[in-house]
Length: 260
Picture 1 (cartoon, rainbow, N blue to C red):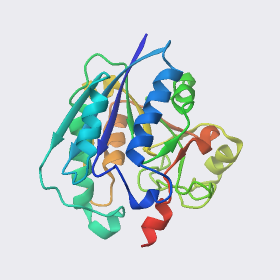
Picture 2: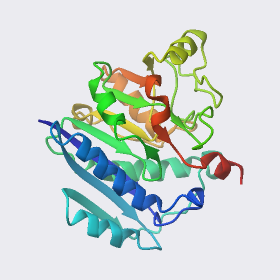
Picture 3: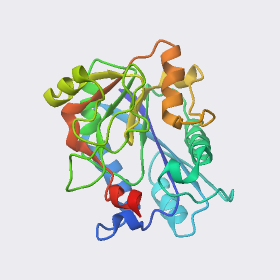
Picture 4: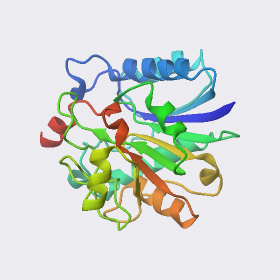
């Protein structure tokens, strides 16, 4: 049976301004993980690595209760990390350094799993997303495309980390690839090889992590995920995004938060 380590990071997730009127992102996150596990129960053995820091709400307690009933490693710390908004442009590279640190802490629990799946804790996604990514015989790092509003599925969410093979960032508008050939592939739903991806839902071959690939925030203008992908490509990894599952990952109301 395939083994997957699911990694997520958390802070103050019981409620979130981006989720106004949509319920609790933490409750949705845990329910979606349960549905995903049920959907693949005969094919995948899941373990979980959660990293939580500095929450001022009941996020640690909720995670502790959930971890008690499942195969979860939970690290919860008070480290007084700064509280940033979403945009790196508003916060500088420092936010990216902290994100790299948090994500790498979650990776510390990797054991004998075949894949690592990073899932952001404030997204909405289909339980079929992982099954689709696993079914594709392409890529050592794989992701769908993510979008920034539940009712506007033309606004791409993750240009910071999603880049074509020449290193050019994807665009906000649909179709997001920055070159004509990849735009055609995107519209047709064909896989696109890229130099970097994350998209809130990212499947990474575990052997890359065991070989020392990690997130990093030390290069100005690069995201922690683009640096992980750069390190992975130096080890021969290939990276793909899959537009055919375009509607499967949504970051609710994020576009509003970016403009506040």
